[in-house]
Length: 135
Image (cartoon, rainbow, N blue to C red; front, top):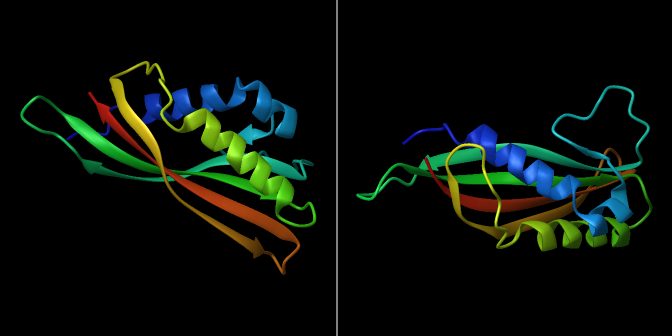
C-alpha cells in the first residue's frame, strides 16, 4: 500500500469541481482546500479530511480513499446547500478523472450529513466519496 496517489487524487477532484459550469454558477470559484483567512464568501465548498486504507491485490498496489467535500453556507435554510451538494455529486460520481500519478479505478458516493452549526447560523453538508486508485 502507498499513499502516493493522495495528492494527485485531490488535485483531480479540485480541478473537476472548479471546472464544472453548473457548480460555478452556484458558488463561483469559492472551492477551497483551506478557506483563506478573512474570506467573505457566504457560501463555499471545501475539500476536507480523508481516510485511506490499503486496497492492494495480486495485480498491484492500490488504495481506497474516503474523502469529504463540504458545502458551508450562511444562507437561510438548506435548499441552496442541497442544490450545491447535488451539483458536486453530479461532478464526482462515476467521474473519469485523470490523475498526475497513478490511476483512478472508480469513484462513488458513500453518504452525506446535513446539519446546522455555529448556533444554527451556518448550514453544512458533508458529502463522503470513496475513490479506488492504483499506483
